[in-house]
Image (cartoon, rainbow, N blue to C red; front, side):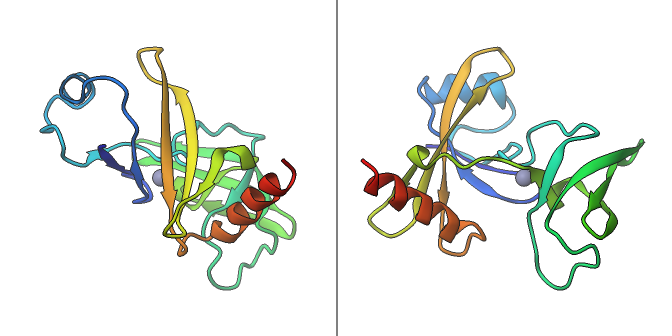
Length: 161
Ligand SMILES: [Zn+2]
């Protein structure tokens, strides 16, 4: 199964492709040989951000001058070199690049499977550019900042069955 790497944040994802691999590559990535890693935005960088959207920080290393890790987009600054997002946090406004935050999302415990080696398999799906629905998954290792959160939700779902 092919791997993709996000050109914005560097996240690696493994993709579950149902169609023939050669034709998948030649359709979506005609200049990349089948089997090679492909550049594709990750599930956090892919969604379009609009003013007013609720967002959450992705990397929370160090002190943050604006406090809370959740806020909303008050203004998008646009220029030929790219976009910057002014985000209102609890204690102030910060200007961030797209890879530093994501849309606030709900984790669905039924989409998380704990694998034998302790990593998590999180099912995802979406609509491709050609309108076809696609399904994939992310493998999340223990180093992932949300590993514990996902794992807890997965075991809660198991206990409720
Ligand atoms: Zn990304």
